[in-house]
Image 1 (cartoon, rainbow, N blue to C red):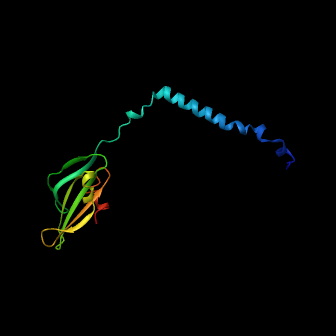
Image 2 (cartoon, helix red, strand yellow; image 1 turned 90 degrees about the horizontal axis):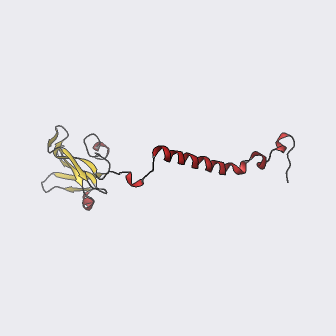
Image 3 (cartoon, rainbow, N blue to C red; image 1 turned 90 degrees about the vertical axis):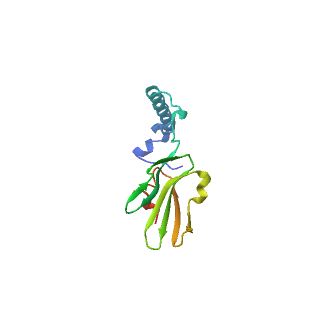
Length: 144
């Protein structure tokens, strides 16, 4: 056993009361929780409301130059769904966009590139999963 000389030798775990610190800490935390319940009231986890719908930007016809030309509003998608933007490009560089909500049953359409039935056009589909992530200000982060 190692003994310490001087003032440090007189200190021990028992004399510091360190073995009772966890008990004291638990009592303080319990007291704080009881006081919070008395002041705030009962906490009911069912009273916390999560959003029932994801809000997305909707526009049926949009260009980068002119903005939304037809059907600008908000659509609501149920939980697990996404906001979507279709980007239709042609070889001359003009882009047309369609923004809408996408139900989870339609998520297979979320990320694809394919040629359009009209020669010289390509369709890019992109989904995102945050509120209004497909509006013109936010879509620059996920559409090339």
